Structure formats: C-alpha cells, structure tokens
Length: 126
Image 1 (cartoon, rainbow, N blue to C red):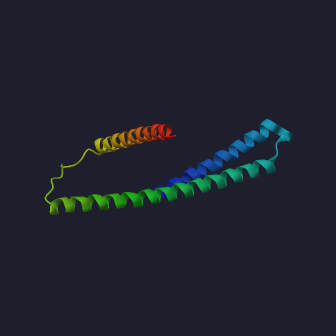
Image 2: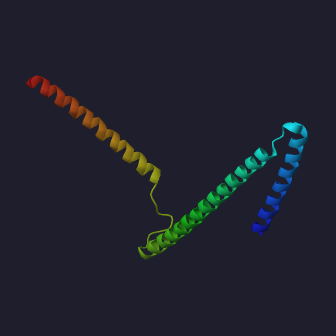
Image 3: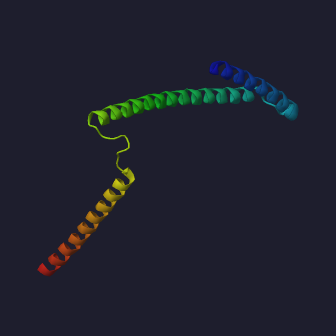
C-alpha cells in the first residue's frame, strides 16, 4: 500500500512540475531557458532520489537497532527471572552518571591541588 501511495505522490509531483514549467514559460516568455529548466529539474529529481535512498537506509538501520533492543530487553527479562530479580528493581542511571561526573570533578580538583603543591615545593627547592 505504501509503495502505491509513493507512486501516486510521484505522479502528482510530476504533474505539478509540468504545470510549474508551463507557468514559468508563460511568465518569462522568450527568456525562458527550457534546457536549463529541465537540467535543474533533473538534478532536483536525482537529489530527491538520493535522499529517499538515504532515508530508506536509515530506516533499515533503525529497524535493525530496534530489533536488537527488543532482543536485549527480552534477554534482560529472562536473566532477571533466572536470578530472581524483580522486574521493577533497577538503578537510577541518571543518579549514577551524576555521581560519576562528581567523582571525576573531585579527582580533577585533587590533581590541580597536587600540581600546585608540587610547583610550590619545586619553587622552594630552587
């Protein structure tokens, strides 16, 4: 069904492009460059096709990732049952990430302090 809809939309686009070409020809009269117009339309059509192919590729990747995610979640449920871990038992990952960032900041501050202390000791030594 979706393929048929796409073909219908493509036909509508072609008809609208023909209409637009005729209107542009009427508007510009003798200054209308049909060859350039056709070339521009061909480029647009090729670009549109490339974008469609790219969207299709990305859709396929998304579908594959979604299936992998479903498999991981199913495996997780099985492992929870085997380990007798309740489904609602979990960790707040955001809190873990915040704690890790906080720990990193503490380590950085400690490194800065030790570097400053080292500089002072080296200054005293000289």
